[in-house]
Image (tube, rainbow, N blue to C red; front, side, top):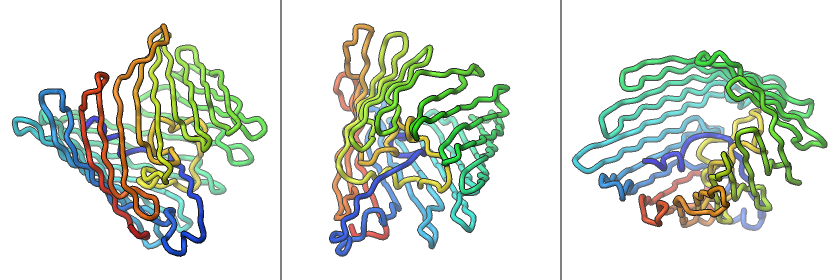
Length: 349
């Protein structure tokens, strides 16, 4: 179950579709295809002595305007000795008459193989001005194996005159600090970022490439570096702390990214894709075929920590209908295998 985040959850999404008028006559464009279900089955923890088998079912629901109104995930795992584990996630999206998301209800519950239970419920309310999100309020409750806690929070968004995000502020009942991020631009490109860490304002040095994407962010205690392909996909990222590096390398196919269809791009919400969301498959133009984890010591020598390798079968619209994933550890031993199937509406398969 350690790779569950690989196929689900959040949420800065963007994708690109190329149009071919001749092809669209025979088959609907991939952009009109709505993903309705992903089923993942597999075996995990293969080197732990307590292997598991698991099934994960994700479903997406739409209204009569083809706007996504729901997302659910149900996972079940079985372990040696008859132990089981499960996770259930439901997200409900509610919109106003103009198609702006105004409310989201998130519910999650899980039970681990030791029998401990966890649950959370979060309601988010969204407010807009001039077509842009200006406020999000959150109210959450948590139950960790019988220990109950509650939290409320508010996020405020400010913009430049041309609609770029200029500031967002985050306050929470769980913290006395007010955290925020500031963004400045020059000639339409990001030129400065400032943010708070534990209440302290930090202004890192940044480099931005010709695509307007951050390639380097240097703060007092850490440094990020990003490499991109010609379409702006992050294909390598490095986090340096105390002279050592954690590195992730991504490889992609040439097809439209199916992960970008799991959760919608919500109308009017700020675009932070120039440096945020680079750690997950949702932000790619194409499907991830490899995710490789590396570590470099102070001498700069890189060694493998493991990898996820993914293959796909595609329909006539260039979207995956089936796939397989193999995960390996630092020694190259297989620690998890999985098979995926994908279902759509609004397109031929």
